[in-house]
Length: 261
Image (tube, rainbow, N blue to C red; front, side, top):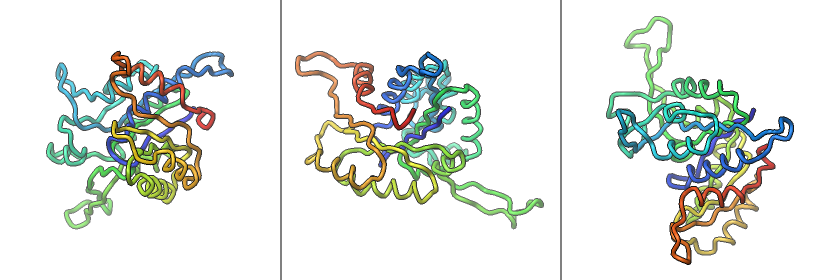
């Protein structure tokens, strides 16, 4: 079994698109040792910006992940911590007088691991250092108002605790060289292994000197680039609509899986 965490240089870098493409590619790969397709589970512990459907908060990204993963997971199994407001999750939690903790995330993650999938793909939220907010802990066994203190937690603390291998998505836009290097260096400084990166053109506005920037990153990042995704419009040159699933199918064929399996 293998476990990967998907992070990115910033918000709106295309984590869900890339995650779905990775899952599509992995589920189509034949496990030669078992002579069957790989079982791939998805986990998106935190989301913000959800629709209330039949009394349940549904995040669109989590819904898409559920449609590509092949372990028969429910939306809440994939995305157990969800908020309606499309804002930073820890702020959404604070507005509801709730806390998000690494311990809570890990408890949900252990439930996903019980699926015994060949590969579990965990999609982060925001960038590497996504805040979860402060939590109050007791500094001794005899709790009192005087021996309680606050500590700040980040989603990256969950990744550190669970020793997940990281795949970094670089949003190819102006500033991406700095963002990619700082993110990679922080992951490494946290003692976590970043095993690969993916260049993703998430915006319809083409980046100037795209090929030169990718070439720079290939030199600067000491990990393999396993895919490069160009932006795909919703309508092709002939005026035909291109569905999300067609985009994913196309992208999945461009991924070098040799580093992952």
